[in-house]
Every structure is written in C-alpha cells, then in structure tokens.
Image (cartoon, rainbow over all chains, first blue to last red):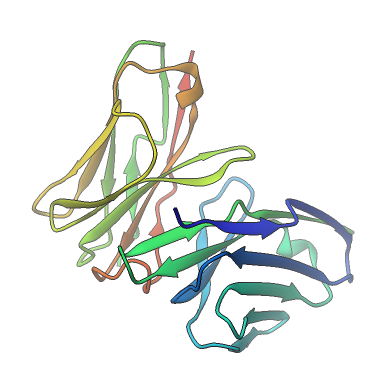
Amino acid sequence: GQQVMQIPQYQHVQEGEDFTTYCNSSTTLSNIQWYKQRPGGHPVFLIQLVKSGEVKKQKRLTFQFGEAKKNSSLHITATQTTDVGTYFCAGGWEYGNKLVFGAGTILRVKS
Amino acid sequence: KAGVTQTPRYLIKTRGQQVTLSCSPISGHRSVSWYQQTPGQGLQFLFEYFSETQRNKGNFPGRFSGRQFSNSRSEMNVSTLELGDSALYLCASSPTDRVQRSPLHFGNGTRLTVT
C-alpha cells in the first residue's frame, strides 16, 4: 500500500538554528500537505503543494515538492520557541482518494 | 463557523467494554475521517466517510467500526476494548469528496484510556 516515510523522528535544536524535515514516497504523489500539531493540540493544516518542483514560503517556513513528486521538505529558518510541536506531511494519491500521513517529526527548541 | 466538535473529550473504559465516539464536522463538510494517534505511531488512518458511505478503511480489526449520518455527523465504535486501544482518536472533516486534495480540519480529539 501507499506509504510516506518521514525523517527525522526527533529534532532538538537551539533557538535560532535551522530545522528541516523530509518526506519520501516510493510512488508518485498527486500532492502533499503539511500539518503542525502543538503539544496537547490537534493537527493544523499549514500548506498544500501540487506542482512538480513547487516551492512555497510562509514567513520563516519554506516548503518544497520534488521534481518527481516523490519527496518533500519543510525547512524552518531561525527556529523560535513557538515552533515546537510535531510536523506531519501527508501524501495524496488521486487513485482511491487516499491521503497518507508520515510518522511526524517532533521539534523541540531550546531557548 | 464552528470547528469540528468531538465528544467526549476524555473517556476511561475497562477491557472488554465497548465505546462510541462522536464527531460533528464543520457545517457544510460532507467528508469525515477518523485517525488513531499513539505516541511514536503517528496518525493511523481508521476510515473515511462521504455522504454516509465508507469510502476508505485502514488496517484495523473489525472491532473498529463507524458510520455517518445524513447530517454528516459521524460516530465510531470500538467493541471488546483492549489495553492497546488507549489513544487519542481524532476526527477530521473536509469540504469535498477529494479528501486527498483539500485541507483536513481536525477536532480536538477524544482521549480514550483503557484499564
């Protein structure tokens, strides 16, 4: 079945350092979504990427979708304590209307 | 617009019992998905309903079932509870039938503890 692998599982950074999480699929995706879950909260939608090679930015967050539409990354520049939480990617497949979540990357930021 | 509402927020049950969780989607949203979240396991997909029809089902035993009503509200049921069923159960709604293409709106979840 369709799977999305996400790494790393954990990342502990000093405030001000950069952070990146990666998602990979063995098959071509139709789109990829990113969510953030704060500790004790629920996942909140951040962004969706649809086009091959697409890059989108939200303030300090940069999202990329690979040329082959099999991988994606989320990069945070100069992390802040408000960035703590778990970041999930979710790969979409048109066939079967499937949306599959990665295992998530837990980000901790030391101030 | 009110968000996705899940009830109850917390639940404590004993092994062997059954439980029913409820989810009211955002008004106008006809797709409802359910996820199980446990530490280290991420978001495990349970099932997805659209217009009262189950369209997709995850790899969970038959003890896990669900349904959707004509007003789009959804319930999931877990029978013969096991300790491993302790988890946060999240419901998410979507405005379209192409769930993979539209953002999911999650509720706050129901925290189920099985003792």
